Length: 360
Image 1 (cartoon, rainbow, N blue to C red):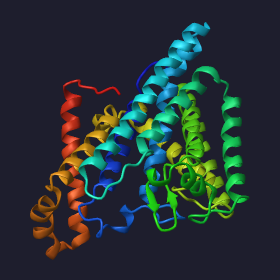
Image 2: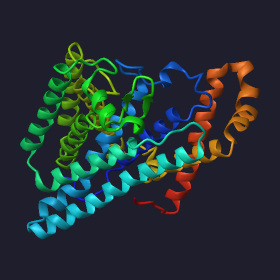
Image 3: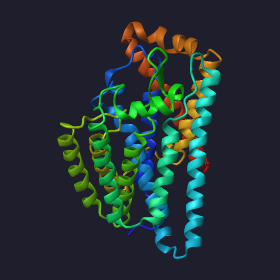
Image 4: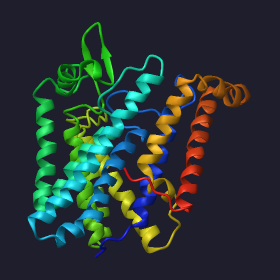
């Protein structure tokens, strides 16, 4: 059993996931992006659609590895409350960091409205919920029951309240009523809002994090084969379920939870075997140990480049002009995203080499 020990494969996979986030989120020209770097418009699942669920699942794994042994060894209510307090405060800090980044974007970037919810806000909420479960609902059966209840309940909520179409699904209707102009997108003419990290869709994202808790427990117990088998089962379940409930990242459908979660479990199992057991190099670790800092830093960099009108001439001079004629506009856009990601990769490598860690 693994106790209170960092698992290198998890740091590596977390880092590669964050690097993928930066690559997908920072195209040089959004009018020219390779199809395999774009999210599905609505139903369906493209490679970028796997990134956020992978990260949320790794959040669950990390919480189990960091808190699982402590929670098992904690006997008094006072100790459990102290442990939970630290988890809650960290989750709140992550949430508030997300709000702050959106405020910065609204202040600096032309035409950018303030958005209340987002990636870090969802991570913060799921972090708190997963910590609560790890400390106070430790039993595997109870967590699996909650996982199944969320997936079936969410399916029923959407299925019997209008279906899965944009604008009329229950998640969009709730975001329209409660978030309105504070959503990711808002149509003043119709009054309709949509947010891919909205209120109701946060519920199934918690199921993704719970799956991470169970994956972390299997890693602690050394059950890599069980982890891989579970991954195959969930992928098959997600595929079958998608015939009735489409794969959809923006709604975070239950089939999407199973399909992406199962894929993540397979990759975690392979990484764990190759890196932790066979000694392969843990590429991505420097990103992984400062994941939130890398994400926030890249966001701030984009806000500053856009806010001070540096981004467009920088891209035009260094990427578009020399590359577009020869390789095409999509390649130029991708080259910028790759260079941007590598720039932060070098920075994270320097921080890692010097032992610098930014803990939110």
